Image (cartoon, rainbow, N blue to C red; front, top):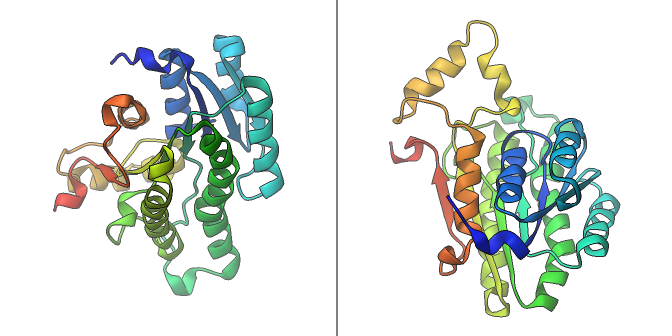
Length: 251
């Protein structure tokens, strides 16, 4: 998969230290893009910096904190002068907690990370994209944004909110050069889902059996879809929510 058009693009990605975010950052870097990442930890980001040098940089911070987000976007603008593609990937799970098992602190933590954090990052980057009169925003939703069972009360609510937010975002700004879409992953083998593989791995086996494709996906598969949706080939795709779930939501 080759997208030479990314050679002159600047990509801003959240949650890039592991899982889907890391795979997205690496995929765009391999396509020649300049990538700026934001995460609360830096383990694998250090490796990307060592491998890609000036083509990549990052900042530590939480999407829950507006100051962190504004500082991150400001640093990206100071270093690279623009943000062409925004990947809102940072997110957390809720342990499949039902509503009566979800205390207010857990609800707020999930909503502040998955929804309000996306709002913070989008608004910080969008003002610059509007000046450029062009920008692509890709939000990570989930199959939990379509159906129950993909998470607990807070997570499922947050992913439904992301889908609505994405559609409204594109509707409001598409005539000003902005294109916003969401991806809805199903069972992706990432550190966030490692609990399913612990012990005898029965939960992971069950998930694979319940997925029509019969397996978990690798984060690189989501990254490859991200490349396409961010490319000019997908320019007429607006406000869409694209499942990448091995057929889970077709059941």
